Length: 119
Image 1 (spheres, rainbow, N blue to C red):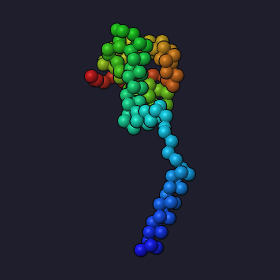
Image 2 (image 1 turned 90 degrees about the horizontal axis):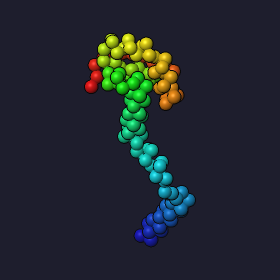
Image 3 (image 1 turned 90 degrees about the vertical axis):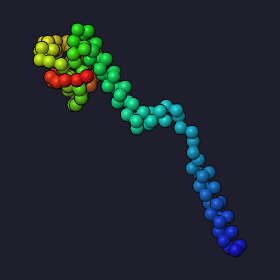
């Protein structure tokens, strides 16, 4: 019986030494929030909302309600538009829109317009 107690005591002492050797430190709140936001996808939602606001500002008030940003891939931003008339107007203004978006989001180097329904 004493031999088992001695082994248990030695095991507990080793655990205590390990904990003292590798103590847990408090993590900065910014790091914890960053991990939480990335796990839950909140960062993408915020980024999408920021991009939508930038596109709305770049295309102007009259066209903002008729287009939505799509995916951004390799520097090319897809913009979904309500109809072909809006697409044609944005095609005419492409250089100005691209310049305005480039001031806000440096990653964008080209725009691609697609006609489609959206809410």
